[in-house]
Image: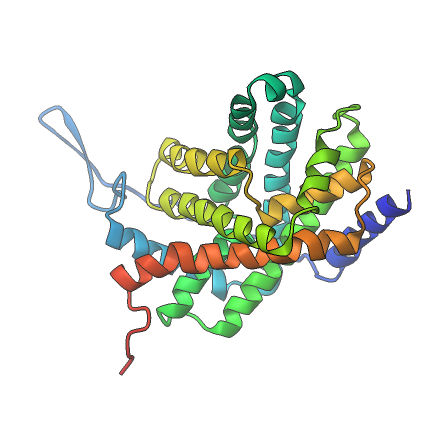
Length: 310
């Protein structure tokens, strides 16, 4: 009970530290020129291509990173809370479905891992990308690219990373508490086992798993930004995200939900251990995976990373 109260208090205290204003974002619809010639429908030049070429894909990622970096702290924080909830919903579904297959796990562990990956986190990331959320792990790639191209500053990068990370944390904690109180997981031991395993790894193991995880997550974000259709975005997201879950890699934001949920359900893990044994090394690994493994190769190929600026 004390742990449950501590986690809820931590969530509410962090959320109350930032004012949620009532400002709204204006969405403007872009008109697409359509011409009917000889019975055929032609889409005008302003229609986005179904799939961007690699150089244009990189340019779009830099522009997105610059826009994210320029946003006010409170806006990033609020969208971070929403994204934390989205990712938590995905992890919740994964635990409910893939984490509730003990028979399959015993007889065919590979299949159980595929089920765990296929049902859950992909839909959480899709909700974030389609609605314009702020996800810390994706921002490690996009905002880093904007800084390296001189489109924003290191100060704005720190602002974006801090606001999105805190927002993701609050959203994840909030949903973990709701799931705990809902009782939907019943007596299933999956959440406790997952949380315990995640906090039992050596620092370097967690760090390396964080690198590889966000390598795949940021590739999903990067590829999804290059397609214009919802179906295309879903395909771009599904394969890398389901892969990282099936491979047993670690995503800091998903763990912000999974570990507190396990604690609430009886896992013998302290809040300090949650940070030192998992969130800190995984977060550092996620930063390396997004900035160095994903954006650096594209930035040095299609951009101007490390080029002398006259």
